Length: 259
Length: 76
Length: 222
Image (cartoon, rainbow over all chains, first blue to last red; front, side, top):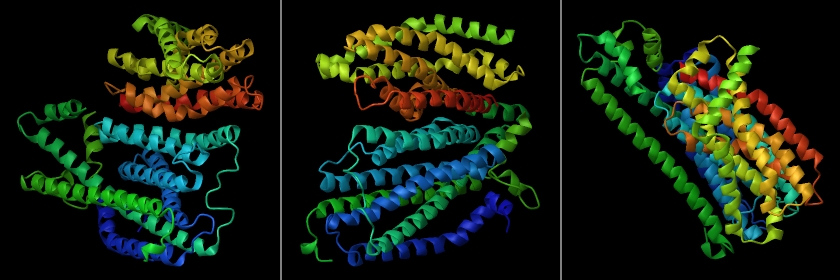
């Protein structure tokens, strides 16, 4: 099986059908073990108390939020360079997932911040860049919705995603710079000075579970997107084929009208 | 788990995990309902006699999702 | 070379004639700066502290305001297709259009800045710094905005989406611009470091902006 075989949507769907049950089982298992470790094995932090357990949601979500953007950027390269429809599908399917996990990271960060720092929100470098990331995700989702033609939408989104990926780096750097300028840097060191292995193990398990969850959801949502495109293609064929008399002129008119 | 020794700030931990459950649950439900809706639509279209171009042709299909751009290129 | 000059002149004249051009941008800038004291109170000390930020945000919003028409008007009357098919480098065309747009809307904003600075109680040094940083930073805003304008060109009401897409991209420009501008007021700030970063961002925008915007225009022209 080569990459080209994988890139064929029909073969991709077949592969998904085979892999998906295993992925779901693995996700549920990893989540169960991870949660068990997070709640029963991991000790209370002597400074942070029970709130240290929020970390097991927060860190995996944050990691996924970034991973998902990297996924989108890679797919964007795929759709711009190789013009591959499956890359388009992958980028589109990843955007809502990325937004959801960015939101989770922000929410769990805020809820963690309240008992730790006394407020839900601080303009900390990490939180701020995640807020900007969330806006970028939502803008990209809005752009996907705004352009009717899926191929055009994919290319335009690929461009803005790739400009965004350069920008995410600059934003991260500039926000950190801005943050040290405006705040004493001593307050915020999430996770404490050193992470003990009793916390590292459940953290790794939860991170694994979240990655598996993301892959599962991403594959499912890619499958949906492929179906959506097939329906669209069939509708356009049906519309262009309906009056059999002058089908060639109508074929010409159909995409223009759909635009 | 014994909730009595859950300690201070339990509400924040619960809130974080509850929100995670809600968001992930919503994602799963959204993907599932989307799938059933699309499958129904696809079946309805196929039942009404509309075929994908590739299924009408004999031999192995090249790709289905590319049928839209392929259409366009032919027209131009 | 002559086509570049004539394109610049055409774009500049169009930008000035359509919708009031320079005047409307400056008016909007004035309106934004005026509304701030009503929100935070007429406290001159507070205003002078956040004055540079007010001017920068005002300039950002005024720049965003006119950007959705950057390529749209050309698309509607068909001249965009002619530009794409002309065989000239589309990146260069975008760059010239951005330059003309900046000359028509960005430059008047910079020129209006010293006057508006007086309303927010900036001292002489701060006025110079804000004007200087805007002079360097406003082109970066236009260039980053051109990416958004190219991406949303085919949308009938792309203005709001354009702002949502561009504002995250403008965050670093705003950070370094305001940091350099307030270097005089806040002693701990170093002027040169953020200013050089701001220059770097503008140079960066000169490369990325035309490349990405031209790519987006090609997609929408297909």
